[in-house]
Image 1 (cartoon, rainbow, N blue to C red):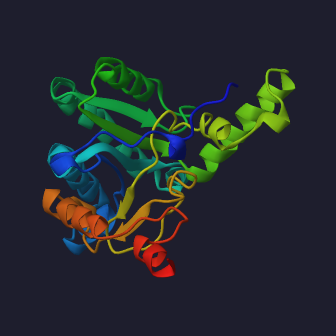
Image 2 (image 1 turned 180 degrees about the vertical axis):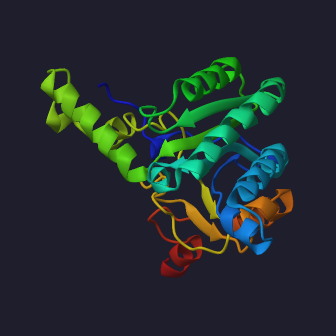
Length: 259
C-alpha cells in the first residue's frame, strides 16, 4: 500500500459560482417511512417518493455551486429491516439507474457507488459496475451513492487492508499515516464533504462518513426526504456560507484582536 494524498491535504476545489470554491455536500436522506405513515401509505411509497427527491436534488445541485454530492442510500445496518422492505430498496436502486443512467451519462455526471459489495445480488453488482463504467469519463458533476455502507465498517475494512499489506511484507506499521489510511477507504480517492445534511429533523450522523466528517459542517433540516428539493438545498447552502470554518485554528477576528 503506497502513500497517497489525504482528503484533508488536497488542493482547494475548483471555483464554483461567483468565484466561490465548488462544494462537496453529503446528505443523509431520512424520513421516507414517516412521510408515508403520515399519509397512511405503506413505507414502500415513501421510498419511491424519495427516489423522486433524489432526482430533483441531483438536478438542482450544480446550479448551487455543488460539484460533488454523496448520498446515503443503504447502510450496513439496513439489512436488519424486514425482507420486503430490503427487496423494495434494492428494486429502487435498479429502477433509478435503469430510468436515469442515460440522462446522468448525457449530463456529464460521474457515478460512484461506495461501500461493501460483498453480499449484494449479482444483478445489483452488474448495475453498479455498469453505472460506474458508463459515466467514468464524466467530470461535470460527481454523484456518490453510499450503498451497503457503514462508517465503522469502512474504517474496519481499511484497517484490514493495511494489516494484510503488512502481513505480505509490502507495508510497514511505522509507515501508516492518515493519508495512507484514507487510501484504503471505499470513498477514496475523493475529497471530504464540506457539509453534511440530514433531513427529517433527526440530529445524528448515524454511522455515515465517520472518518470523512472530521471538519464537515452539520445541518439538520426539519423536512422529510420525499419532500426535499433544490429550495431546501439552497437554504442549507446559505446557512453553510454564513459560517466561518476554522479547521482547528482561530477566527480571523480573534487573530486581529490578539495582535
